Image (cartoon, rainbow, N blue to C red; front, side, top):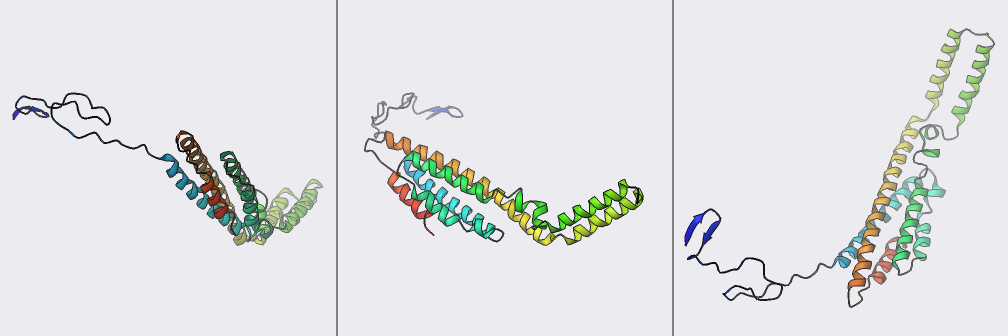
Length: 239
């Protein structure tokens, strides 16, 4: 062996392998015998995507269930519809890729319906602390009376400010702050869950695209639709 320099050497000044990679499934083009190149099979992205699709179905069912169970503590009528709505969604599901995409659209709509009060309505900061509006209504009435006294000059500006401050303090004391904090936490969670459902939908749509493409390319007509349709009905449509 003659060493010329680092990473540059020959054996008895002979180079056995010619430059350039050999063609697939052919012997090497060197002068010496060499085994056939290994044929690397194409990755079956359809099978992988079918597995991922089931994961997205399972995860979104968990998220929707959590939304319903937490919301039912505040609004039982709204929170307890989850199972029936999912059964309705999967009941219309057909073994077509378009039908599966439509199903995910409906899942997102259900999520938005369940979490629609996350930043307004019953779960807003004011309504959560005063659900029936009694404290707020009484405060408004007393403040209007105080405003009239100020306009009629029956009280001084200093007296007005003192009485208004007292009204605000009394109203704040009557607010159910512990209940309000609990409701606000649920509202925040609903918002995160709605975002999660949208992310799972995006992943599911990509999986559907991969399966659809793989089925078209496969000469044997490999079809994933029957499998994923049965999975969707089993995961989402069962109570």
